[in-house]
Image 1 (cartoon, rainbow, N blue to C red):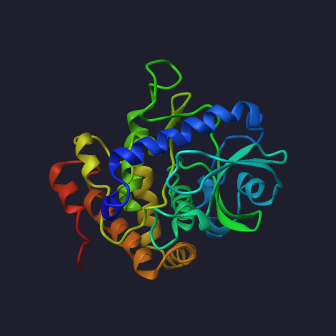
Image 2: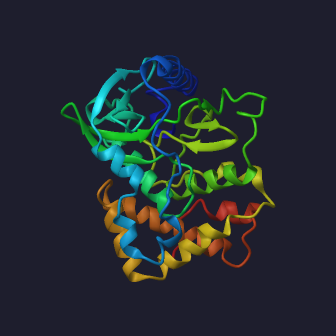
Image 3: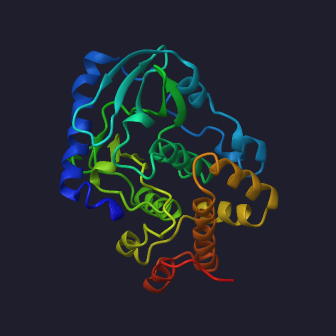
Length: 293
């Protein structure tokens, strides 16, 4: 939790996150039906880099989250911040985090950082963050994220075919993603698993200017950095038009220095792995500081 450790010690944070998720799982069957909207995320990803207009074009899933009426909501127990499980008319269920309910956050901007994390995930085709939008519900502005019905947290995953196995590549993608967004709040309560698939959630403390997210990469030394992420990073950093659109979108959610922190970490990533995309100690240590040109 970094600078917030004095406010919410790690073990307490773990218990709160587990309690929140357990409450959502407990009430979901009687509260809502299984998600009716298709859970095929980021359907526009293949053309995003080539077609720059698609960066700011909403997907079908995002439109459902943004437009469909909220017909019921239930406050979840056990969370440090206010969190609601909501049911949308003909669009399944979602998690709503209102700005007014934030207590453990960075200057009251946690809901915006949730949306920024989804945008970065979508842009780079990482495909781990459930669709997330800014949304006003009952007069409250906040983030609204697709709820993955039946998922379990990383702490809870079971040794069975539904919860235990997700690919090592997915975990590496999540660790690289955490580096890009400088997220040091990736405990077992902040990712979930369903049907052998990994989902990254809870990004309200991401996008800090100080670099976080490196140390977990040491567990994967000798493994390859996903080359599709490096390809997209190179296309972004070598295109003035793409850079302009990307930074303009991020600026909707955070301060200028945080935006350029993202760009600096992307530059670090490309510089370290463009020639040989293999994780090793020297390269990981090099990611800890912004590169000077």
